[in-house]
Image 1 (spheres, rainbow, N blue to C red):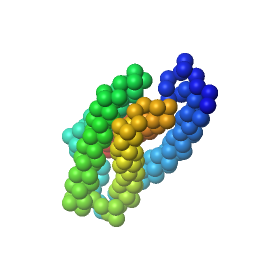
Image 2 (image 1 turned 135 degrees about the horizontal axis):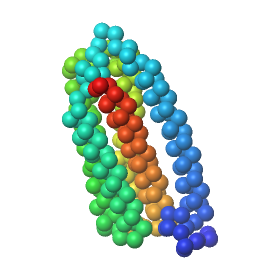
Image 3 (image 1 turned 90 degrees about the horizontal axis):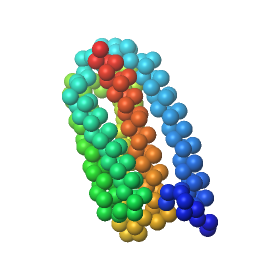
Length: 198
């Protein structure tokens, strides 16, 4: 295995570089998935039937809290990768842990928001608008859940093995995934919630 020590740890082997390239291709497919969900939502967002409209159910406080939690988690994830590159295992683990806790907080607020919608009579079956909204938000939430499971498993591996070419590569790929979810959330925040509240 040829190692290029001039590159960051996660890029030093050809296999690792190929994995990162492959993950970028995967993210391209994820962009297509979310673009499709956004297109469906924007087609149906005025189709409220007898149900409530976006303006009637969206509240700014939980949305701002979700945004704060997820964007802060992106920052701490970046700090974890920076610590990894400095070969500082303990700070990296702390920052990964904070990232996952913030992600868990985001999911908690989102679940509370969904329960509130249902209590107000806004369900998947109520209207085309609500079904497209729940599918878009639910798909993003499922991705965050997957990220929490992945990050937990990654932390266990780092604790056991430290930062090797393999764990550094997995950590970096996880950070790409987590940052991608934050970018998707910025679009949801801007074009679903803020637009819906106007």
